[in-house]
Image 1 (cartoon, rainbow, N blue to C red):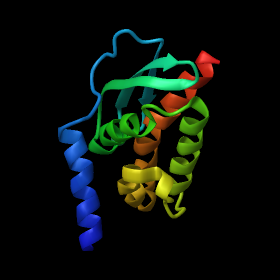
Image 2 (image 1 turned 180 degrees about the vertical axis):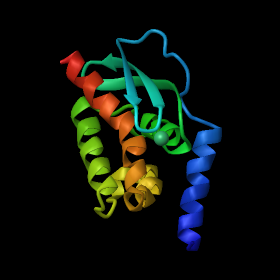
Image 3 (image 1 turned 45 degrees about the vertical axis):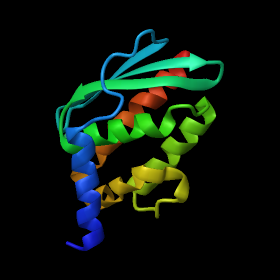
Length: 140
Ligand code: ZN
């Protein structure tokens, strides 16, 4: 394992052990639950909007380190963004999970780049963003 891989792995574990924005957000406008049956991961997202902007984002969940760390990183990344920006970020993240080079817009989410080498775990990392996309669609 390269030093860079080790650093990425450390960042993933750090978010898993000390998740950011974890818990029920009160008040929230949308709550959306997502499940990844292949691993047993669960994520529930809570979103609060101010106009088009995601003013508040939190999550609850359980599952593997990759799913929960991605949820933690994602809440940090999309908080304060517009719906359109969050969807664009989700698209970039999906491309990275399928092997694209992470671009700068992904920020800390780039620590998940190694997941593209682990096909069985792609759904774990994809779960939080898939749940976010459904939540944003439901809000309309
Ligand atoms: Zn998982």
